[in-house]
Structure formats: C-alpha cells, structure tokens
Amino acid sequence: MKHEIDLGIILDTTKPIELFIPVKNRSERKVTIVKVSKDCSCTSVSIDKTSLMPGESAHVRVSTNLTGKTNLYRGEVVIESDATEKIDEIQIQGTITGQIRIRPWQSTVVLGDHYVPATFTVFSDDQNGKWKYAGFTSDDPNIRIELTSTLTSPTTSTYAGTVVIPKEEERAGYAKSQRAVVTLRFNNDRIGKSLELKHVVELVTRRSVTTDPSLVTFNGGEIEQKRTILVQSGDPIDIDSAICGSPCLKSAIRRLDAKSLLIELTFQPVANQGDLPQNMTCDLQSSGKTLASIPINVVSIP
Image (cartoon, rainbow, N blue to C red):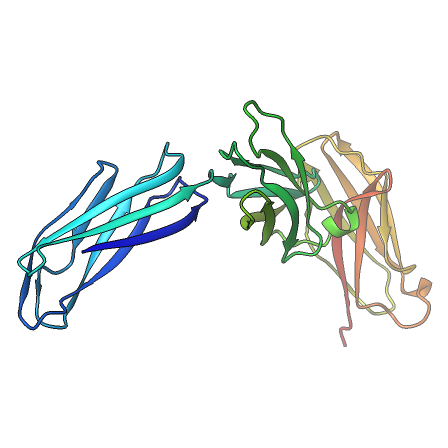
C-alpha cells in the first residue's frame, strides 16, 4: 500500500526532519517486518519492533538531512514484511522556502560604566519571497530592537539587529546580571506565513569603579562622625563631586593618583532637619554622570 505524508512548508533546513511513523498489524495473525529501506543517503530509518501480534503497532523513525536542498523535497520509505501485502510505501514531501534564523541565538548588553548594546543577525536563504520584519515583544519593557535590512545579491531576507536600552535612567536600574527573551515576528506574503524567532538577551552590569568599604554606617546619635572611603578604578577616573542624600552629610574629595582617590564623609546631626534618614546614598559623579553609588546606613545605637 502507498501512504503519503505532506510536511507542508519547511522553514528551517539547518535541523534534520525527525518523523516517528506508526505501523499497525491489522491482520489476524502475527506479522514480521523483514526490511525497512529508504531512497536517499540523506535519510536514515529504523524500526523499534519487527514482530507484531494482531492489533499491535511499531514505530518507524525517519531522520532526513535537508542541508542544501531547495524547492520541493520528496522522499520514500519502504517497509517489507511477510504480510499478505508484502510492500508498504511511505512517500514524504514538503516545500522548502528557505531557512530563516538568528545568529547568534544569544547576545549580551553591557551596562554600568561602559554601556555597550548587543548585536545579532537575522538571515534567510529564501530567494523567491521576502521575510518582512513585523515587530517584536520582550519580557523586559526597557529593551528595544533596532533592525536594518541589509542588501545582498541575490536578494535574501537579511537584517542587522541591535539590542538597546535607550534611556540612561533605565540602564541604571539593573542588578549585576539578568536575562530577558525577545520575540521577533516576520511575515512572508508570498507563502502567506508568519514566523516568530526567539532571541535571548543577557544584561550584564560591569563597574570599573570600586569603593572600600562598599557600605558606610553612621550612628544616628548627636556626635559628629567621619568616614573615609577609598575609590579605585582600572582606568583613570575624574570624579568631581560626591552628592549625598541628606544635609546631615558633608563630603570632600582628595585625589591620590589618576586611578584612585579618597572620599571623606562627615556626619553632622545638628545639620539635619526633621526625621533622620535611615538609608541614603553618596553618588560619585563625573560631569553630572554617576559612576558609582555608596550605600549609607544611619542606625540608632542606644
């Protein structure tokens, strides 16, 4: 008997097609599978059971490598047995319209002192139609995707992509490392199909400026107190101000060399008006841009 399997539109030829085809013994006696064969070296076949009792089923596994194939794909698997009809033919076909994919599948946005957007490429081997970019969604609301069509010859659907977080205040709100997933949508009018591609974005915060100690604590009593903080960087730094979040804190900067300086903090309770703040920061700034923030805790010690 002949059986047909239509795979429809095949969008990605970079991965083998894997099929598990059920074969059932519909007779009233035991049937033995003698041989399973295929018509192409690009295909491998196997069966999980060769002896079938009445009503029992086996599965034929078919794996086909479509690399380099275009247009219409056709393949055939032949099952030989000792049944009344000794030959069963399974014909497999599908329409290859060109692979579309993202490379790399994951990219990294570097945040912190030196912001670096991420880049990726979307490309397709489709030369007959055109995959058109139709927008994106992201589980991180700050992420934006910029996609630019690239001219190729022959014409293919190729885009240069960039992952950005456009606003500086949004970039400042990330922890040291986290991950987001972006979904890009494409339409192909010629074949009337839509496609979604997933792209993983690593958001990594790297700071070249370090402070020692990383946390400053003051006693919230009535005694003036001083703390000294060592600020260092692997690159030359130019910190021109240390902005503290309360009038009870004063700061002074003393440079040691091009890559290090001291921040001298003075806690003056008499300068405080109203309730004493419990949690503050001292922002180290260069030309109005914050390079590092030092957490400051004010605790009450009886």
